[in-house]
Length: 90
Image (cartoon, rainbow, N blue to C red; front, side, top):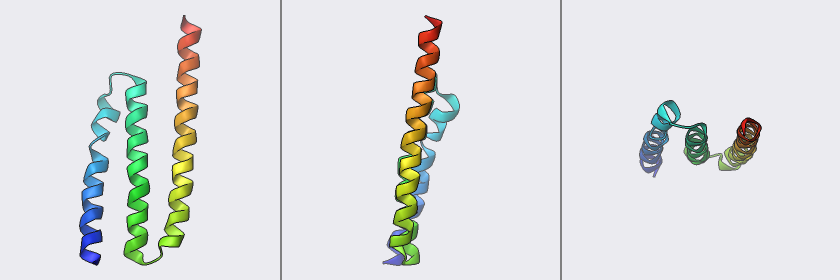
């Protein structure tokens, strides 16, 4: 069973790296913000996988929930900041 979680963790790391191209080369700030949000959501799953691997899922679930909340709030804050900046230009 442990080999399954190790394989799934390696696959998840690969999937996390896919939106990284959009973060680097995104045409707009909102594309980059969406890619960072996708990477953050997958990182929550990765933290839960580590919890299963170490046999202390309850501890890692708390960390994953805190990270997901922080990711959500940061995404909203950055989007609000850039939308205000665009409206000020018009």
